[in-house]
Image 1 (tube, rainbow, N blue to C red):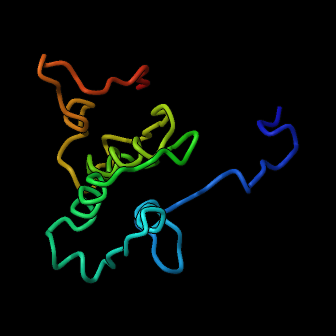
Image 2 (image 1 turned 90 degrees about the vertical axis):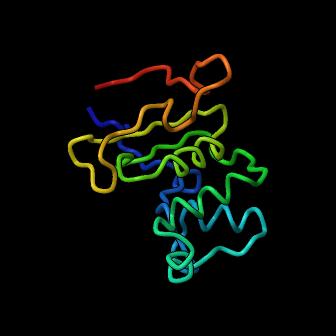
Length: 137
């Protein structure tokens, strides 16, 4: 049985984006800057600002009033992204309906896969600020 009932999805309603993006390629970072009306920082400049430029720029964006834009978000290769990027995607997604797909054995940039507490922090009562409804292993 075909997953798509032999029809293509409405590609006008689906965005497939790179994380970074730029003038010629859409991406979560670049599009968010554009939506906020602020200039996106090119990688060549960002790497002079921080040893982890993508994390630095995503953290900067988190200081803005980001409005949800997407109904659902799927983050593939989640193990390769900093917590700030996961937080940014969460803010961009209505009702926090997002999936982070990752392979902890294919980790390029971190020494371990981060927990929700490490990504979203804990509150004054010591409870996670965000809990995933389901965790599939």
